[in-house]
Image 1 (cartoon, one colour):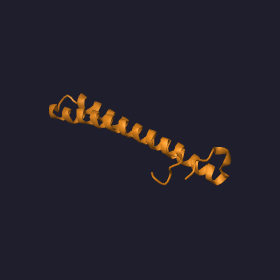
Image 2 (spheres, rainbow, N blue to C red):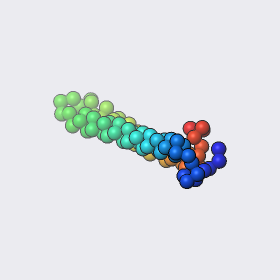
Image 3 (cartoon, rainbow, N blue to C red):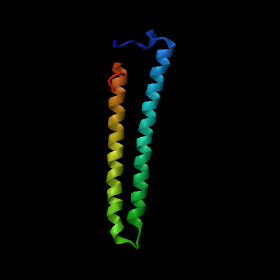
Image 4 (cartoon, rainbow, N blue to C red):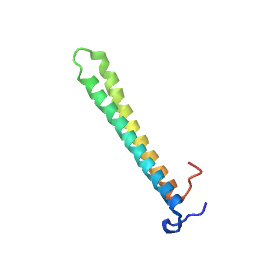
Length: 91
């Protein structure tokens, strides 16, 4: 697929490209939201006083939160690079 400038696209293709960019943004926000959920639950699990063996799950939740955040940003930038190059079919 040739790389077309935004001015040469017909309206339908331009709008499709904009929807793809917004979907990529929404996906990043979903990763961030999920990461924050794990961060909050990890904080709650670490702060529980009565159950000492549950703290390990809290620290595990912190790690999962960091993994989701890294995965989200990696996915966002790789998809954004593909969109800018015009490689829609290879996603």
